Image (cartoon, rainbow, N blue to C red; front, side):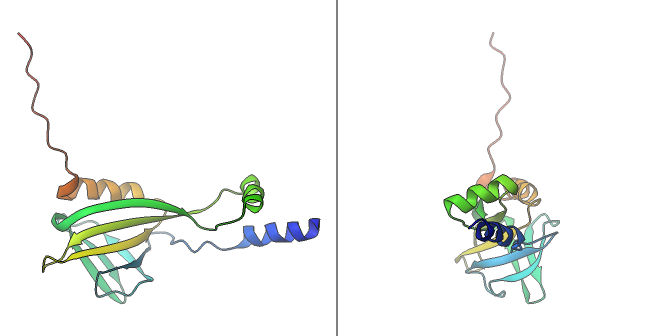
Length: 149
């Protein structure tokens, strides 16, 4: 029995993560046209007016001004039972996948959604850029406070 449990733990630890790496981004799915779900490419966040997902299969352009909302979420890479999760958790940190869901209006004023899986280091940068450049998440500036007489 111990050999079977050891072998099971070895298999779990040896499983490769299906998460994206480096600067790669995967279009997971959505209603955006031009790119098939599962396509791997790059996000270009350098322009001030549009977010561009570029891949060999095509590209998706999302104008920052057209973004209605966005959401960041994480998901555990491998779902295990209680006992295997405890065993693996004692030996190795559980891996997570990072997702961004972006809802926006296209040129024809049709609601669209795009879901991207991003690498571990990108969520902070992408979230900051979306908060800064999308109109729905901008906070109105507070007026300067006046001293009380």
